Length: 53
Image 1 (cartoon, one colour):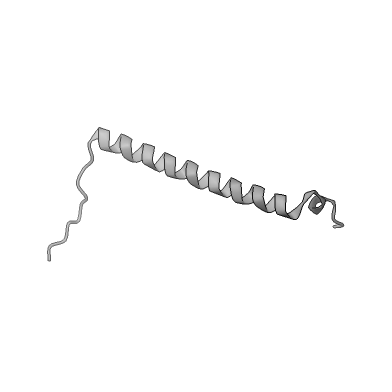
Image 2 (cartoon, rainbow, N blue to C red; image 1 turned 180 degrees about the vertical axis):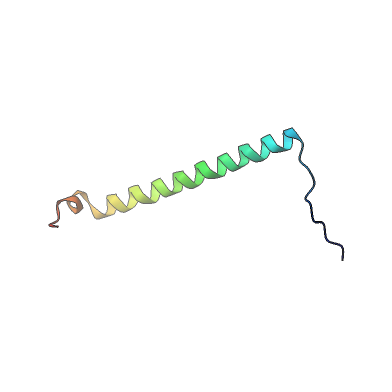
């Protein structure tokens, strides 16, 4: 079994595609986090902010 110490170098087009894909994944993850946050706040109701400290 041979080991490749270096990955193959990417062309500028491949780097651009990888960057766009990473950005799309990051945006999708952020949208899911915001959705979970909104659903949690909606389930707790507006009175959650009026609790005694």
